Amino acid sequence: MKVNAVPRPPGFAHALVHADDTAELVRRVAPVAAAADRDTGAQIALAVSAEAEQALRAELADCSGGIGRLTTLTRSARESGQTVAAWRARELRALSSSGRPVFVVAQHDPDLDGIDGGFWIELEAALNISLDGLPVTQLCVYPRIPLHGAVGDAALANHPLQLRGEQLTPNPASRPPAEVLAALPFAPPHLLGPPDVQLQYNTFELSRVRDAVEEAARACRFDPVRSEDMVQAVNEVATNAVEHGSPEAALSVWSRPGELVCEVHDTGSIPLALIGLAPPHPSRPRGRGTWIARQLCDSLHVWRAPDGTHVRLLVRA
Image 1 (cartoon, rainbow, N blue to C red):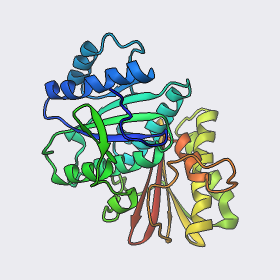
Image 2: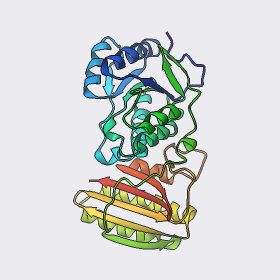
Image 3: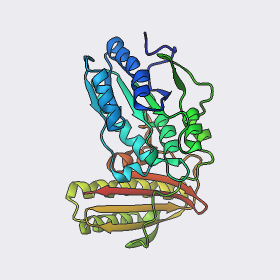
Image 4: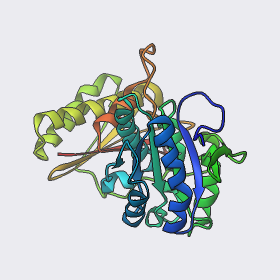
């Protein structure tokens, strides 16, 4: 049995699997994972519950490439589906750099559904952008009837493939990320209260932005490297805001011991908030600022609002 049953160029294969309990998850997923190990030498990586991980490890104990677990995400990352997609892209890009493909089993967690299911809708759409072109096959396991109806509908729309039997087959219900996310409001991760620092700036005042972030990083007792990361990340986003958003933008800063949050707001609008997820092509001299910022931050979340575009960056010491 070949995992790549559908003819397609090498790259990200994103498939939906329905399973209502751990036993069914193992029964459906384990044969496909074992075939990926046998036929392609794929590395197997898990992002599932502890119960499912234990069961899969027992079932796949004979896999020659071994089984790993994707990094457990911080609370701030888990509040932003696009941030999780950026984290996953970094990790899977590193894993696949060995020359071996990666086979991922991921599982829906109802604790992250929220009030509107937005986390999962955003995450799965963002993965289609951030993992595009990588030699990764990811099976995403969802119950047939999730607790939140929007989660199930979006899972069907966000996966170009479905697992039928032991074959990955095209999913005619899938849609492009922009279409899936058209109605999603992209709310901020959480309210933070009045900022410690707030300033307006234009293109000629970016040095004020950098100075404010550097001073806040010192107050948070960041080491020089982490402080430089945040200054560079905010500078990239702040520059984009006044070059592409509006002539004047605003910076807000919240400082707390060991953690710094900065938010950039401009009055412009963007058609799709999932910017900076795919690495820019080397031939493009511009358009890499948000991608660089995502690599430097623990969390970077973009959302649309009636007053324009917001980008919130978080870095921990």
